[in-house]
Image (cartoon, rainbow, N blue to C red; front, side, top):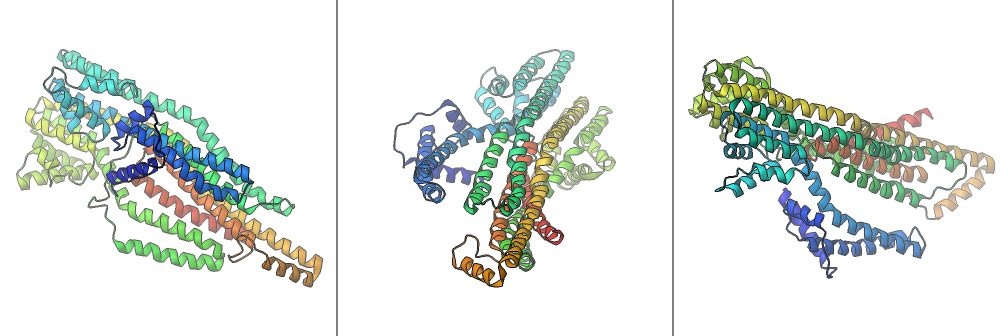
Length: 598
């Protein structure tokens, strides 16, 4: 389903909920701004009423469930609180989504400034530079610049000043950089070069400082999330067997609610809050699922189903029937996500390899052009000099140009061009510059060399940002996929062992006849979780902890990926799929290994 379909479906749901609360309401300025930024097809008043309607639905749906766990008055209060939480989610969701998308947009701030700089090096006209930067970019920032350029047509302005003012409150360095760009366009050639360098330095330093502050600010919340959302629940899981053996009652419904409802909801809220606080995100190249190299054959999904069915049979025999739902959910969802997004992930990797050599390619082409070689001939030479994906891409462009007798731009960006299946805004910008240099001739060589250095600085900034953020997220990701399931599986095995010890003690203390009578009484009484194979305590406890383990693996992996790379569905889907497979396998393997040791 496309993003437009998702938005339309969400809008229809909000309108339906709003009809349940036909009251006069007022909307807040942040909500109105968020809906305007998202181009949402609903008004702020509709969203507010939709939140109230959601409160009614959530309260009535949660009341029967909480009534089973608490006295009537407490149940009513809890249902009312659930309704208020549902309303708050509806009211805040557009604001958080807009904030997250703006963070992803600001990741391209240095790229936009870089495209303006390289165009001004060839032609000191702010209007043409703004048009070039908007045309060669993708994403909200390029679209915003294009809108300002359209509004500035027929006026003395270029649209750069208004563009900088719009985004200055979210990234002040971008506003200062656009001011320096406009001043450089009107300066002398010597002053212009220094001004352009200062503009790019300003936006790079501003982005780096914002990310460094975010890393410092988020360190304490991440530590708290790790302690109270992961370590403490896992520690309590380890204490439960000892508590039950000491005679402390463990209420099964309360255990299910806490571990499979309350804790995952708390983790989800923390994930949303932390991701929405990210000021800048360097999102990977966007790969649409209809990309020719991202298709998946139906037989691959059938292979996943076959492997999961075999896993269910093996786990049901070796462990117990209670493990079958975990294998089914973790294996089917995780395997399907990996199969669906792995081809797109390979396209991601190929794009990164192409981008990694762009600075070298521009530098070498620029040096040849400075020496008086035409761009077309320089591309042929550099294609032979460069190895790897970038050299192959240049060789494809040279071959296309010769075979179809087209210009440099069509050789890269045409329907049959070298970049037709490479969704890289950075590579497309470089191709636009090469096409422009082909018309400018020798004076463009120095601009190509300078742009190569700028691309290298952009890549260094992204690497530094990801390296610093990965130090914060690797522990969470490893805990969700490996360490948490390892502790959970060993604990469930300990519970099974304690249940066996308790049964043996009861048999030796009371005799076989008394034990048979106790067993008969237990079987005649209703017991939660007794429908599964094995001891009821093991089945219920294993399913409860296993569900928590899988949910925490999904949430912690999503948090780590979103903080490090932004909200990219390919990376999210692929990594969540791997985490589910790893968590399911580790949890059950830890159970088997611990059962053999204890």
